[in-house]
Length: 475
Image (cartoon, rainbow, N blue to C red; front, side, top):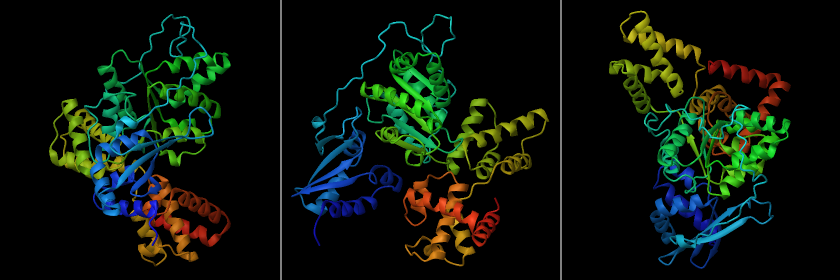
């Protein structure tokens, strides 16, 4: 069998996958592609300098062992960093870096000329007529790192946030995109990073803004014919935090202006932090040139907290509020409210309120009463595994058959239905759904959902499948 760059890298990945955590493998190794094999030197392409730096710092030993197994003791690894050129040149920006040789890193030193050099800054946050150009950060001091507890569900995002706070614009976590479902702490973490930067670097200009407000400011600037002033204002920010960036979907004008602001900040070593309810790969109606920039740094997912983390969150909340509560009650609430942190804290606040207003003692029965109300009022979330089991049982097949590569029509339809319900009833990304249902990609999941929608409206029998499975999922 011919030895190629791809075959060598595939064998290396197989070894690496067996020796590191699945989440780490997915984050740091799946995006890499092998590009060239020359004698004993393997060239791999990574999406940003961040990947190069992180691999060299954390995985250089395992990479060396894996490569030596394949190519012998004299094996060499060369990183190829490939990014689209920011300034519209057809050729992508590529640089080659030998492994463990950081001095070889080059950087593009390109600047976007400011169109407005006027020293009088027009601040869109200031009420007209009030002469004040001081930029307030718009940060909430309650959203800090102290009360953003670490757990398996948020470790990567939290540690990346701390790294950015220690060296804003000085790491390759730029931009840092934090994504995840409702109530998992995206906004909290974004504020915490900003607050930490303000504490460590008081001279830096930090600004938090929602994508919705950013859009409104842009629309106002166009109406008042001062678009350049708007751009100029955002280009002088040192750390720009934009919340719910998916709100820019379909807004081409706002995306265009944000593209220019982002380029200027990034090229001048400023830090950009974004939050979104979905991963870049799942964002629709966002221009490709923006999406490619979102991928330059790190996209870190916040997942639903596990039981231990939920208990810690509740205990921390109670401690901060100066309230004592028996462990068995805390554990009962943590066990039964699993979806997100916001609901978890909401339940404990309701429990304290019920107890104090109605002079009731906090007991398991009172906790049960509160939890039942929360669970009843919250659409129950089911797991992808459970959905696959329900669909498989309905079509009288096992889960392995559902996930198999076969193209038999009834199995394909069952698989598409599982993907459809997983997208509808879970907060998992399309890529995550695809990987769990037969190792498919996000495009397959998207196609499956469209197929189910089409067949539901044209095929009575298929519509019955959808209705029956929905009832079985009891949603």
